[in-house]
Length: 92
Image (cartoon, rainbow, N blue to C red; front, side, top):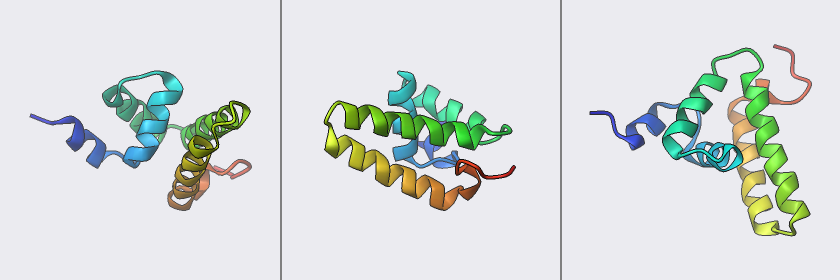
């Protein structure tokens, strides 16, 4: 049987990125893993993941939740380092 951890390990996203998607979309981790994997396979999907993380950073800053914003910024930096095609303005 495939476990949740197996799903996360097979995903194109890190666990932190999956967690960010889960919180953004109000999904369980398993569903967020599947959503993230889908988005990483479709045209402009990586840009959508980047937009979701940026939305959550903005929301955290508006709520004066600097620690959460800093955590999400680190997630964003890692995501863009691994998936540079996700940057806004990237041609794809």
